[in-house]
Length: 88
Length: 187
Image (cartoon, rainbow over all chains, first blue to last red; front, side, top):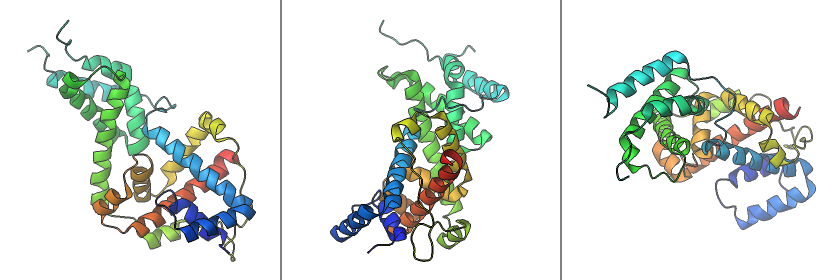
């Protein structure tokens, strides 16, 4: 019988690679009797979904600092220098 | 109209500067680096304007460019800094959530409906805080994998580590994030 530590490692690795048949059965058996590991599995799935949403930029309107005015100025200057249509 | 207007780079800065900056800051965690990434993104956008199809919104398009800039930065840093020492991260993990028989020391809490969590601004704020608390090098590796969905093979090749080593480190990162969310968001 797998321990919870082993089960949690398999749940994490399952996000990285397919499990072997033996591992799958061991994990299934363990999950059938262990509510904590079932919750752990759902929690990791939520973490993964959340992190992928971060990548898609769906959360860019998260509260956070404004682009500081000085930084904005510096970028504006650089853009003006580089812009192909900037006046001479 | 057959020709495009000149690229409105200043308009992009006005309309999307803060959104880009927050996005960059969330990942790079350093105001100077975030500013640099925003600037590089807008400069690259000027160059790429001719290829902008107009299918995606300008913001989505800019974020796409920014993602590449950040990823480049991550790769540079990962190479320069080397990898977290697996032994050391064990020590940093602190208290094990398992008892001596390798079962959970206490029953895990139910986090409830995942859809509700993803709608919860508290959840996102605390997730960010928890990401910030990961040891920097472990965080970088984790973000390469989870946020940018780099293939395991690429990460291993680039950082010259074995897949087993990578899985162990990803496991540690997940355990820490989980525990941090559990304490600060659920608890």
